[in-house]
Image 1: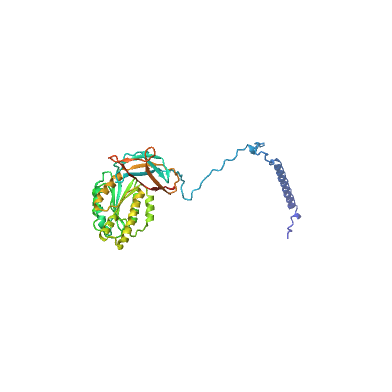
Image 2 (image 1 turned 120 degrees about the vertical axis):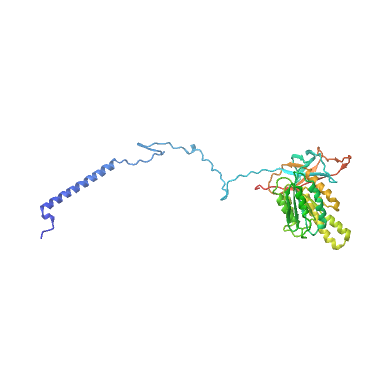
Length: 396
């Protein structure tokens, strides 16, 4: 057998020596190249003290600014975050003008005309106000609702008033708007606002035979005020009723708040309780068993008077049927002929509070005003105006 040691053969020994020499030469060349490369690579320089952009020869020096040379930073902008989902909005508070219709009459109910701005004095919560505008309406168009109690409880005394209301319907003019609403347990619109007298006549003719004895006047008045609040301008309610309330959903205090909070509505009331009490006294004298009935009607009359007084209207309590036609003529004249006073209140708070109003008449020099009739005699006067108003809220 041949030996596996290559050194025993000269040919293989020479080849091995040559390969070792070449490998050593390659290692020496690689080490020399790495040393030259490390010597040629520039060493990183420390940045200049002032800092700045780098150039081929090093950093370009930018002088540092002293702290006192730097302008102060602007204050952060004040921002208000709206609640999530709410858009941006702006709020502007504008104090509105207050408009007060005023009726000046004699003790007989006749309208006193010819007065001027200097003859009126307006007090809001006892504070005099500066009247900005003043006008006297003459034969002005009207927007009114005939609100009629129609029940079996007091139909004998309501019927003459319904018949007399034809006088009011007959006095309507082409520019007037009138609606007719009847109520017992609930309200029923018999004629929506119309300028056609025939529709008013037709609505009144429907009131023939009442179906219920209940008279929920508070609910009926509340609903009517709610409807009128959506109509622009001055409106009126002519309420023909006994004033008795059976079992309304709302109470007396709530209807009073509704009357106070509803602007530009005047209520003229015609009570039938006076005629009823006269009839009871004539037929039964002062019998104790009818004392409770009289007390209920006295309370009802007080409520009807309050509705009118709060809104600048008038309360009528006829004793006889023959008085009804004259009453309706007076109401038509009162509505068409009024003074209208406008002022900007000195109390600019819009806090939703109730402000009491008082309107007085005076001479131009501030003294008492003397009014004479056609015969030159002094006559007493009555000033009828709304007793207050409810200020708006800022959010409205």
